[in-house]
Length: 486
Ligand code: CS2
Image: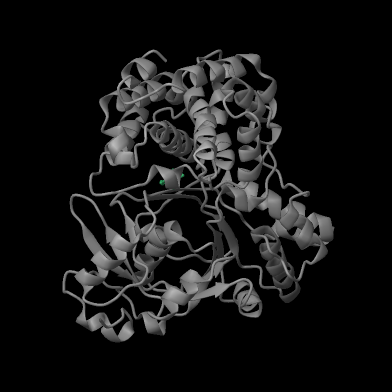
C-alpha cells in the first residue's frame, strides 16, 4: 500500500478533510517541545486550521528522547491523520508539522529553529515531570537534568535548559519577539514555566534572567481534549480507510478546548479564528479542568485498576462508580472551585462525565495511571488542601490517594511495572512493606516531595488509611457497598 504523503493526498477519499492552505509553501513559526499525541491532536490541529487565515506557523517538533516519531513521520512528509471518534466521526489530514527533530541527533537544527527570527512561539507538552519542579512548584535545582544543564549549558537535556539556551542566544541577537507557551496540565502552567526558566537562567547569568523577565511572556493556558494513545488497531483501521499507510495517526474525541492568557511577546497564529479562547484570567478554567476532569480521571484510573477495569468508558458505565464520582464532585471537588457567574460548574461537570461515556473511545486507564506522583498533587492534593482550609470533607478525595497506594502494591506484587519518575522508590516501598498496607500507606504518605505539608496532617493520613482498608477488599461484587459507604 502507498504511504500517506504530499503525492498521495489527491488520492484520499473525498470525505477526508485536508489542510486549507498551501502546506508546501508555508514555513515554520513555532517550535514545540514534546510533540506527542496530545500536541498533535490539539495545538497542532488548531494551528493547522489557523493557517487557513494566513501566516507561516508550521511547527518544528523537538522530541527530547524518542526517535520514533521523527522516523515514522519522515516517511510521510510529516503528514498524519487526526481521527475524531465520536457520534459524528471524521478524519482530517494535519499538515502543520514541518520538521521533527531529536535532541540527541539534531541539536544544531533545533537551536537554529529556536533562535530563528521567524520563530515567534516556543511551546511545550512535556508532562508535569518535564518542568523539574519541587513540591512547592518551584524549579528543583537539585534535579539531575538541571544539575547537568547548569554544568553543560550548551548541551541541555531538560526542556528548561533548552529554552534558556535559546533565549540567551535570542537576547544576543535581539530577536526577542517570542512567546513561550506551556500546554501541560499544571496549575498556573505558564507562570510555573516562566519562573523555572528565570530561576535556571539566574543560576548562570542574572542579566539574562532579568532580560527574560522583562521581555518574554509565558501565558497560562488550559488545554483539553481526550486523546488516547495511538495503537496498532488505529494504524491499521486508519490506513485501510485512507487507502494509504499512515504510520502514526492520532485519535481524539470531538470535544476540544484551548484557553490562553492574552499575554504575548510577539506575533501568534490566528487561533482566535478557529475556536481558541483568549482571556485575562485562565485560572478559573484551568482549576476547573484540572480538578473536575483530571481529578476524576485519576480517580477512575486507580479505582478501576483495583477492579481490573480497562477503560474510562467501562469504568464510568458502572452505576456504582459513576455514583461515587458524582458524589466526589458534588461534595468535595466543585465546592473548591470559584466561578461566580462565569461558568455553570455542575453543567460543566455533567458534560465531562458525558464525554467519559463516549463509547467510540478506548481510553486506557493504564495510560491515565502514569506518573501518579507528578499528577496527583495538581489533580487531587490541591483540592484536599482547599477542603482542609474550609473545614470541608476529604473522605472521598482520599479515595484516589488510597487507590494509588494499592495500585502500586498490586503492580509490584504482580511483578508488573508502573510508569512514574518515582517508580523505583515506590516499588522499593511496596516490596519492603509487602503484605502490610498500613505500613506501606504510612511510607508513601511520608513522601514529602509528593505530599509536602500534608505528610504531617493527621486528619489526611487517617482519611487515607480508612479508604485503604475499604479499597483493599473492593471487588465488582461489593463496590456498591465499599464506594457507597465512603
Ligand atoms: C489524562 C489526560 O492521561 C491523563 O492523565 O487525564 O491526558 C486527559 O485525557 C486530558 O487532560 C484531557 O484534556
